[in-house]
Length: 326
Length: 263
Image (cartoon, rainbow over the protein chains, first blue to last red):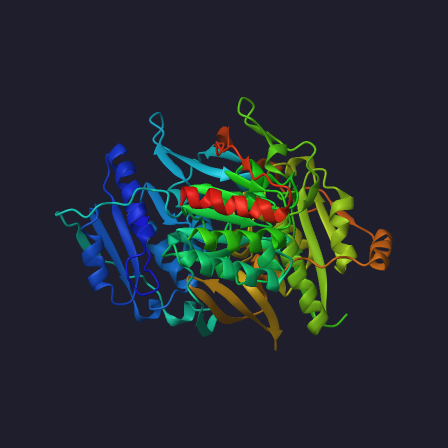
């Protein structure tokens, strides 16, 4: 069973289809059925659509209280569902939702949980789930297995091949989430939407880190981004964690293990030392350029092109030359 | 002391900011060697300590830092006192080596019960070694208190905690009654530096050390992290081509020429 999610506009979150993609394989290997669970209010349309993506069954847990995400209610509803259905395997996305729900749900179901998996397969010998995940900030890859029931894991975004739409449609089942107002222990005062940065879709990303030195430095990166926008459609400014911690730039632009993981054609790292926590987010960039005054920076170990200089001196000359060549 | 009682859970880990070449993976023994990497307080837990200190400054609070492990370095954890925590309790026992998230939460929950009263428990969002991100939320379940995940700011108002909690596409301002547990995201800010004076004072502050027996832990129930296989991270297979030039400017120009060539 996989737990679906809606995106910000109420559409199917891509992780839902990715979970169904890997879920199908696991269900086939275990010769069992694949079901999806959707939680929210008025799920009719989205459930109809999800039913076309490899799911044999779609459980619809509807209640007006579930219109906005409330962790306490999700945990209660999923505890009830899993208690009745007893899925062999239960998967959630390693999203802000999954990160909050999964550990609590696993505790309540008296099982264990492996988070942030990038690979899942069934061990043929015992039918248990082999969960592959990066550890030590991406320095090593470990395979874990636990004996709990259900076999519970959260799955990293954009790693699994999404399920494809088929012509056969799964069965849609209404399931009473069994929740009420008294279970809401947290009062929501307001929801604030922040600028959505499409880092994951960018062709070119120019990122700054600790070595940028301050807000002024990011203005220079903004200018460089504007220059690239003359040649590329999707250009974004990103950053590593220290830049966010110092308050120089919004966390919505953070790239790394705890931020976005990106795959641009060109990634330019400026004043970034290359802690593995950051490198974990840029592994899939096609070309990586590093500008850093410290030749010993780890970033050069993963870069295709390097400039060992102070970026403040490099960038003006770079921009001038780039314009001449354009 | 006035104000609320805060417990912060902080783990000692090998410095995640260390260059990745320092980490050696022994696939045979399924062990990661972090020899030569200095131990530090998990940076995400440092964010939680910072959050506690901000509340202490604002409203007054008694801040107790708890750490679970085997052979915890007093020098490393003493930093918590040097930056302004009031008490430091180390849950140090050979049985506490490499515990999984569940067992860590079990030890912490027993320790918190032994401490007695508390109003707010803070933890980091995840630890920089196994990156599991579960202990805090499991602890909340064990103590049967309300948990709020991924806080980017925390304030105390009239016996409630008001939190900006990260959600998909932004944040949500939420409020709940104390006692409760909040996991802290790095947006809350880096831990402050200790002043020299505070650092010297911290050396005189006592550190409590509790064993498994002290917190009534049945060591039979403890589970360690079990790995089936361990592999080095896939190398990125890149060879860095360094820009040449007599000046930074010339190198910058050469970079422009090179990138134009591949763009």
